[in-house]
Length: 145
Figure 1 (cartoon, rainbow, N blue to C red):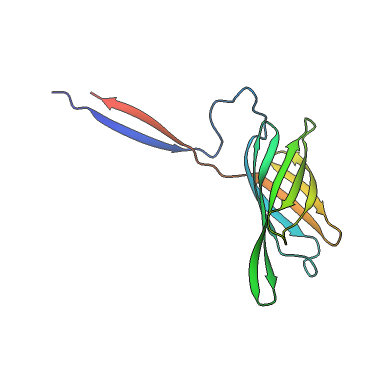
Figure 2 (cartoon, rainbow, N blue to C red):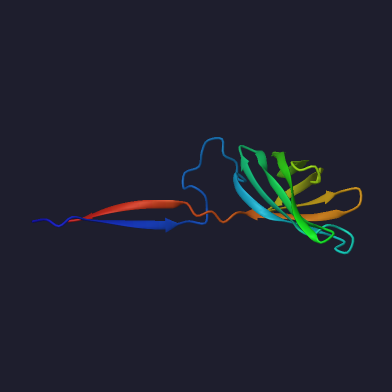
């Protein structure tokens, strides 16, 4: 009598899929990071970016937690943009909420991060994004005879 056992090994990888797609560029994937005000006394708190790059097109959100009087709220802006062939990117923030931020961020990819500045009329924010830690699950099956 043969004993068949199936072992499932779940491999967590911190890098995207193993096979590159034809239209994929080196920055495709999910990115996260912060926008920190250069003048923390007079400007809003840190904001958080969550973006996705696919075929050089950028989509995502920017959230910042704001305190007004004794209450907090989260202002959300949608993010769109494009990665240029010269490894520069422009992120366009469009308000989702009536109080959210509207601006443009110009940045450059340096190694494994995107750095840029968000220059508003009153405040300047340093933007720094890194590839998100994604953990795709791969299943490998073995049969023991």
